Image 1 (spheres, rainbow, N blue to C red):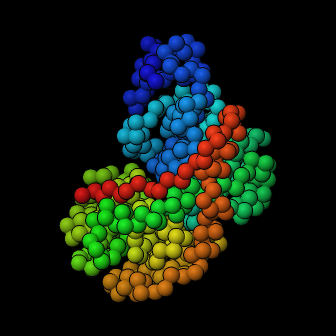
Image 2 (image 1 turned 135 degrees about the horizontal axis):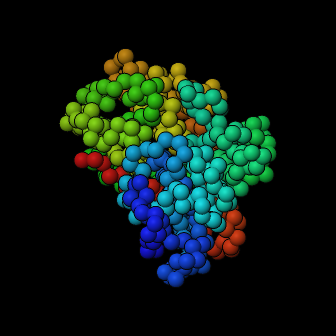
Image 3 (image 1 turned 135 degrees about the vertical axis):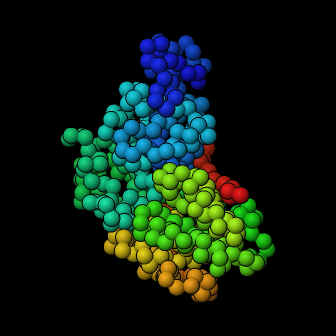
Length: 410
């Protein structure tokens, strides 16, 4: 679609211009397909964008649909979001225009900005379940509180896409008026990782692993209690102790690290570790492929470690993150069977111990906590999206794609 700018308005602060939409009668003559259904993807941060991208294959190839993206001005403004959208080549809409535009469907992964949206909204989690794993700085147990789901006396989401039956119970307890919108939709990220298992060797090759090398994958969430937040030298120590002939050491940091500190600073902090052989992944993609390919994953309370463990990958959990784990959460379950990772002890013996241990069968219980509809998530999302769009669902199946090959920051 071409861009359109009203002479009196000028440019938006981030350089965006007002864009033509199917509802803009004054500019409809410029459109080659003026009769498409208009879908808004609300993308406040990179992890939310990742979840949206997992779900978009359900609708975006349909000639009857046009998807536009917007970064809400409610909540934190993370550096790098607009740049990431530019890289993806998506059509971006200024937030002020988005809240004034009538959409046929809105997709969102958190509550930021949704109280300004009046179009039919499908709300989903952007991590492993909507039940919070962390205690710090959070006053609620999950994302299903009335202040997040209600606008006055109105339920905001037309569809509340939940991971499992337990989340339905959480909604019933905290915001019963939202129950009619609840749909058990599983987890599209976990489904993609599961579908990626047959390609483990391809992921290993893309990461640079030689034949017979073990992949030791360290993935840190954010917060001062995370794997690297509690131990800034952790990745350097890990590379010093383990990188070499027998092991390929791979690392990924939560997107908030990159957007809060900047790419140049992250690369500077990890300069020595990379010189020692650490393979660093970019913030937007790569961690899922690395988790599938790994022989052991070193993590904390974050979603990435839970996804890996749920797949049956041997997992170590930082003991320093336990102070931040919410009792009863899926992170709490992981802490009960993951090999403890003690930052105050040499790392190599601990990793060797974890590699020698049998895979704990409780990984299946964790998988059930992450998704109540394994392998079905994208199909469920598509059904609900088309129901809100008010058009017939395509007759062909919607494939679950494996995650892309990782592209390390060499």
